[in-house]
Length: 120
Image (tube, rainbow, N blue to C red):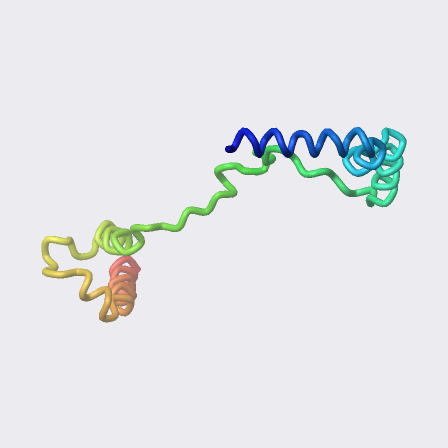
């Protein structure tokens, strides 16, 4: 059954091609002169600073210094920095994150002021 459909449509297409060869060619193909004219017109209407898109990205502009990676462990680093500066150790605190969440900024600031008083 499918073979009959294929034969039927191929015969229809062949008969159309034989009866109207120019109309089929005009619809499907563009002459070289027309294509050249279109290309010239497209290039003339293009601004001077236009650059065609690249097939691959310009990897010279992507450098490690340009990439900003958010600090995922900022919470842990604030505890670690506070402790590494001579403040309280983690073992002396039962839950240091509670103090950070409840306003440890003032505690850290007070510790820094105490250190400055001791030094100066």
